Image (cartoon, rainbow, N blue to C red):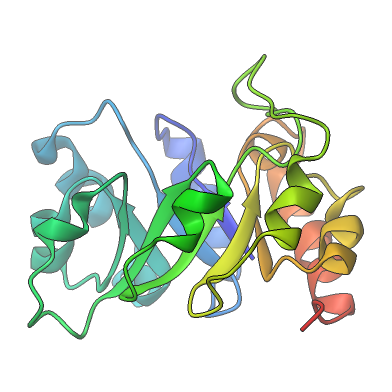
Length: 198
């Protein structure tokens, strides 16, 4: 399971980051679209370094590398920014159409495809009703894990597992929940209860 950060990080978020049991099975995507490169370093310095192996940084590759973070998320065609020699990086990407997912570079380990449900964090952002099933039916790329994103809550995780998505990512449901730690634990428990369709 993956949890994506809110667009801004507050001291309360930093406390929550340290309270959540991150692991290879629960990754944290640090996505701050409005933050400059110089704003990222102080945020990373506030996070214990033992959590760095489970952090995926968006947008600022050089900052990630300097901090020793080896997980990096790409948008669009930014795979060209990654040198072929950088084989120690774990790369992910964002997609919004199945043809985009199917044509991803083979170096991408997993990719979001969204929105599978109406977005919680981006009001009004939604796809057609058959988007979820269409992705599964027309998938040809099995080298890359397909991660469902958008409007996911504890109440629809099981449906996505049954459909055949490889994993899920959450954002709005966690950070808008009155108890984000409880929501994260609950969703992780549901996600791990039954294995995803293979």
